[in-house]
Length: 337
Image 1 (cartoon, helix red, strand yellow):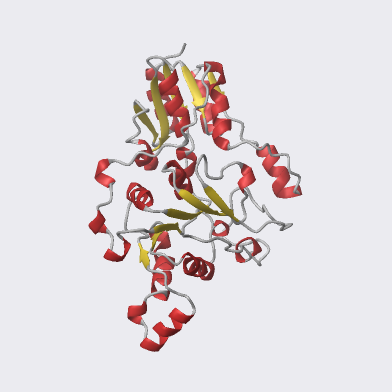
Image 2 (cartoon, one colour):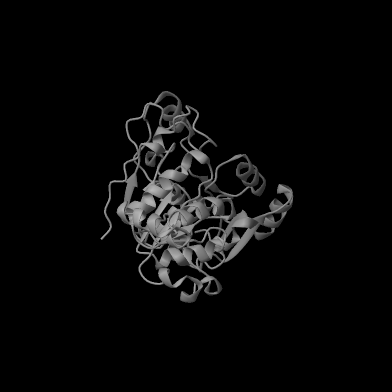
């Protein structure tokens, strides 16, 4: 049996989190296995505390330089969980036994362009697991992993006093515009949640976070305005944490939360890895692509029945049709105790 395994997934946050069951079962089920992982340098923080990975390798600069470093390791088997041109080039140059996961590009093209659904009812994690069949590895029932380095664990006093108890985390970001609620709908959702909310996202989400926070900020309103907000039910306490914390620190906030709301993003998968109750918000993409929250309690918030959806397997900056019904017509039909 192979002893030294290379797992490859270059990007991005959510996709890498979704590969964590693979490295865990390799380490657990192969005797004396040495598991290496190859990704991009900017994603090192996702994996640096993972106890099932013996060594990380990073794609920096020229691909040939990476291949030269990997050749020195003399791997027994390569698990390709990205399956693109670069990973195929790496495998051809390493000349080692390998397996790549099925990307289902044809099936995705059919549903995006012709609305013909040939997608299997299989989560992407289970498709990742298919790559381990030659090794006799079986999937376990432990879900996703996310290990937060001790240095990134959030202390209670890092948060305002209003957000040190029962909180809800809301990941407001998204790689593409059509995967995010419009600002007015984010405000509507926060009003519906009606609990202390921590808004999570990157620097690019700071402005939206600030606008949401200001909308619910009674301190900046007149007494009459505060009374009007109360009548409208606008009682959400908002802390805009967008851009204030790194990814692992944001994960630490998620770990403190009772519920997590997120678009189809990496934070959604981090929340699943931390076994949170997830409210998953879908716009131009669909859960049927196989990337819904894995092995955790979740609720899908989406607008079904649109002839134009899905319009892309990834996303656009703006709705190609101009109406953005997939996000504008979602009904926020839930209740939090």
